[in-house]
Length: 248
Image 1 (cartoon, one colour):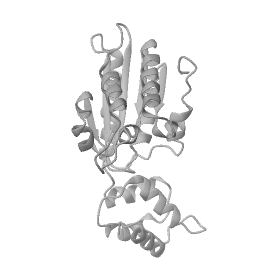
Image 2: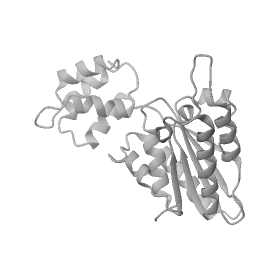
Image 3: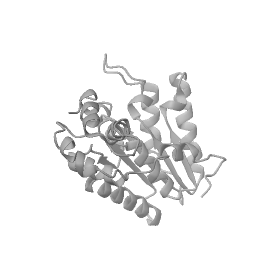
């Protein structure tokens, strides 16, 4: 469905250009839960606002999941609010852009707004800590504001630090918080199998030696760097790359 008010979904589609890799039961359950919540909102005669936070370590695919949920929602208005589009903006300009996005969303009968990387939107840094109170107050108001009667709004936020949002009192404005975990070695091997790597069984032993869960984004990078000319993963190269990435 073409979004309203001339807003395209190209930015959202760019976030899932490589597709979603359903690696492991936790990811499958998360997508099912979020999809069901959005469907329930669409059919509800009482609830008009749903806000979902996808939180988890960096590189676990939160942005891609949020974008895919938005595209699958078939909302008339879909919009991605990302720090990447705000480079060079002052905090007041950022706040105005966020507020204007929500104003547009409230004009459509069925809207969805993705707030990607909330810490970066807030300009949060641990030294201090420092953040933009102007942007924070704008987000607090916009996320909680229900649309007018007959209209529905879904807000999906992504965060790599739920504890930061809790300290900023932003976590509580989301109705639902869903954890996006990194992959276990078994899930990582299954993910490589879904990518069509022919010799996954041969490198499963290398993955079994991983010391900690692997973010899917890092797994894809490591796997690509370990491929030989035939499209198979070189076990020795995989082990070296994992070590260099600080995973093995």
